[in-house]
Image (tube, rainbow, N blue to C red; front, top):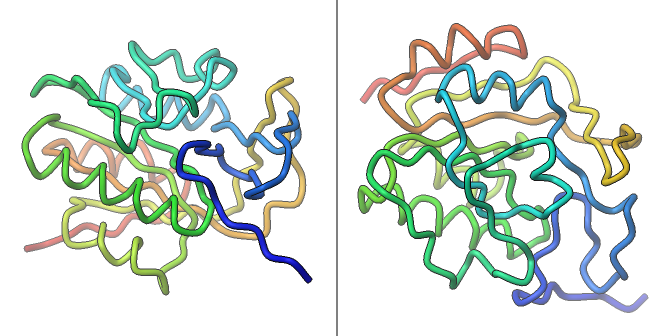
Amino acid sequence: MPTSTANAKKLGYVGRTPGQKTRDSDSWFTPPEYIASVKEVMGNIDLDPFSSTEANKIIKAGCYLTEDSNALITPWNVKKNTRVFMNPPYSSGLIHKAIQRFLSEYEAGHFQEGIVLVNNATDTRWFRMMVPHAEAVCFTDHRISFWNSDGKRVSGNTRGQCFFYFGKNHLKFAEIFSKHGFILRHHP
């Protein structure tokens, strides 16, 4: 059986199989109820670094980067008071690079607050990279039914998800996101 590898120049959105032609059913977008919670915590989303025009109809970020923009190499042009929401590409290899980029931008003080939505893949290196930097994590008590580009729910999600919170507003994050699952706080 042939294997396919991800092309870093063609960053796929959640659910995209590397090497496969893009179809609407392959694009998994964050449903509005979770975006509402993100905005309730942060007030707004200033940057969505791994997005698309279709996804931004739901996210409504002030700025977003698409596959063509390639958020791994394009400057994020963020200010210290910027709030970032990231639902990274889940392809093997790309998610690790996306998490590295997010963390390097955050640790450099390039933005003040961020929420990252990923699978609860606790056995992965990229997941373990985020844990010491996050102030809180919400492990969903259900599998998220993502949307595709035509606004329909995508069936077949086989993994649970979690939201990592980075910033000083961890108590508000815990309060708001507790309706989606259980919260673990980082106590340095």
